[in-house]
Every structure is written in C-alpha cells, then in structure tokens.
Image (cartoon, rainbow, N blue to C red; front, side, top):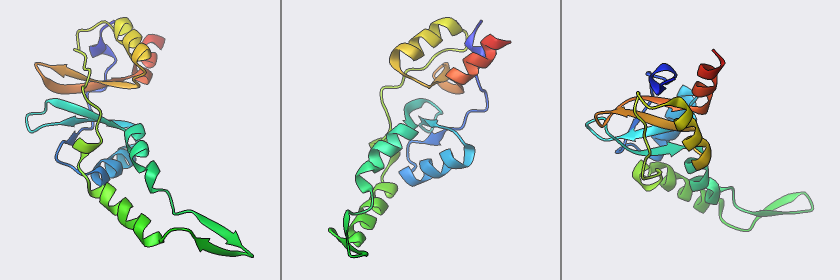
Amino acid sequence: MKVLEVMNKEVVSISKDASVEEATKLMIEKSVGGLPVVDGENKVVGMITEKDLLTRHKEFVPPPYVDILGAFVYLEDPTRANERLKKSLSSSIEDVMSTPVFSVNPEDDVQLVLGFMVEQGFNRIPVEEEEKLVGIVSRGDILKGLAK
C-alpha cells in the first residue's frame, strides 16, 4: 500500500510568516494537532504541533498566588504574566516550529512510513512531491487504510 492511498490531500498548512496566535487559532478551528509550515512556494519548511505550542506557553501559566484566609495574594504582578503571554502569541511561527522536517512521497510504502513514524515519535508527516506540499499522512490515516 502506498502513502497516496491513505494520505489526506486536503491538508491545512500555514505560512512561515504567520504568528503563533494565528497558528493556534487555525489548529483549533480546523481541529488538527499539527500544521505543516510552508514558504511562498508551498515548500515545507517546518512543522508546528500542539506540543510545540504548549511547550512554548508553559512558562506563561497564571502567576503564583497564596490563599490567606480566603483572599488571593499574588506573588507576581498578574499584568506582567499577561504581557508575556501577548508577546508569545505575537511571535513568529519560525521561533516555535520544529525543524528539520521529515516528509514522505506519495509513492512511499505505508508500512515503512509507519515504522519511521513510530520510531521517531511522529503523529503526522507532510507528503511532498517535487518539493511541494501535496498532503499529510497521520497514524490515524494509516490505521484507517490498513483496516480496509
């Protein structure tokens, strides 16, 4: 079985010039866990995943506080935490995306691709043909294809 038979051809991607906030909104809107990041020629230059975004935002948790007799006393100014979060959301995807990107070809064997994905811990891999994004294949896509 070839990747072409199981891949999703309606891939959602995002420009390398987009912000972290735009990527976050797009992933939520399209219910996807990762996006190929492309340049102006639709060449994959990176991947941005939920893990990348959550790792980036873990330092922007609400400021610590203590509960003294039912009153919250912040140990840090909450305004500073909000400012850090806004700065993070406005930063470029290029600051957060994973590189280098491993991609596969539509003609590649699904079993080999699945083995590579499991070995490397990837949930999805972009599919490129002649250095252009033509689809994406996920573990779920492969599972559905094998179940047919």
